[in-house]
Image (cartoon, rainbow, N blue to C red; front, side, top):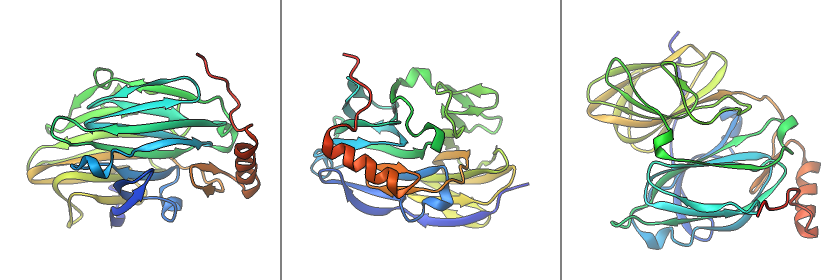
Length: 283
């Protein structure tokens, strides 16, 4: 059964971090409809002055953050002792778990561009205080699969046509793909029934159930077995997401997402007292 469109919304311009201009596809107020996903930010920018201030040191608990770079790079560091740079086509997958403090500082390419996306995914209650972990995923480690219709699917996480991505052991069983559908192609994608599913358009145009979809459009689907996307004359590029709904209460304040107000208050008390970090740096 083809999934019907539940909603379409345009990403909104917001200011985050130390002065980063970005577009938010969805976040705090829309979160219940996107369970287990919490937020999706579109970081594409052509002016270094509008993003170089970056995201200096800040805490997280109870979530995972996944940053995917299209152009430019991002330097990162965290309280576990990890540091490095993710470049074009690479991913930083951070499981905050019981608590982590990190920074992300974007850098332009030779043309001044910094294009990327960051999605926040919730952790189930039983895993919110798990041991934090960090994964750098290089472009060469993410499979690229071509569909019979000619669409190109880069698998960041999950599985497409029997080929699995490099990230495993994620509680909400997410599918996260970067998809290029060539011009004038009708493409279907199978989705596990009962899972939340949405796409985010970032280049070209498409038609979905007679609705015209273009840059920075977010399409959330109802339940079903698959979605169908028909690309326009210039082709279509999108991010595809699906994940197992948690159906748990969400208490969210800033960079910390737990299940109760008491857990949120405890986290901020620990930040003030210097007891927030539960795992010592490995180096």
